[in-house]
Length: 205
Image (tube, rainbow, N blue to C red; front, side):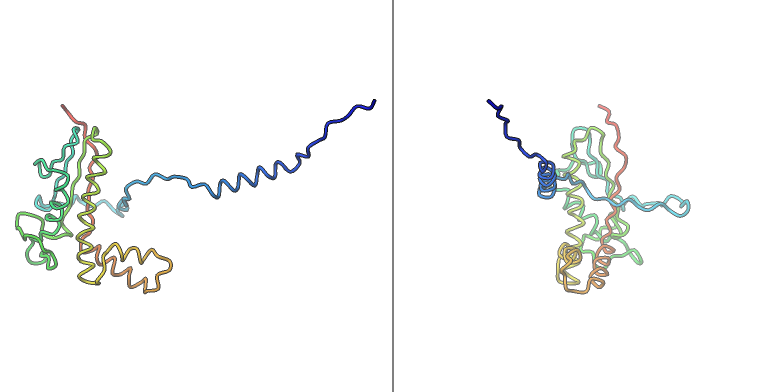
């Protein structure tokens, strides 16, 4: 009696099928990306510049210690009050003459910042500060700049600064992008983001 052979399976196309499935999953799979805080480092100077002197009243000191406690100008402060305090400092307009600020709506306290272009926020955190607290403080400070820029954009151009940026980044925007870019730069110049982050310090208990 003849021996019966088992039927063979043609596996020649299995490699092609596996390759197509691999391409399909690569194209259709969404890869989760971690986002950080966007910061632009200043360009290196062309030549060595002498140290710029900053008036004490133009410096807004924000510190976070190893216990995640917030201090503003050496005084304890709640995180929910930080944005308002930063706005009051940036929008103070205490300068006179060439350093005055016509669009500032603050208290015009001569003991606080002269104008937004001179105002610097200095953030110092401990090495033991938690990442969550660091991010929360950063968000409040950036939100202070955003609120002031929105106010001036509404006053000058009738739309928020955030909407202006959205239009500029929208490839389907039908308006004049060159004109919009000039307006965005003007708003940024009114309230330039001067947020200085010093190297973290080691806490001493």
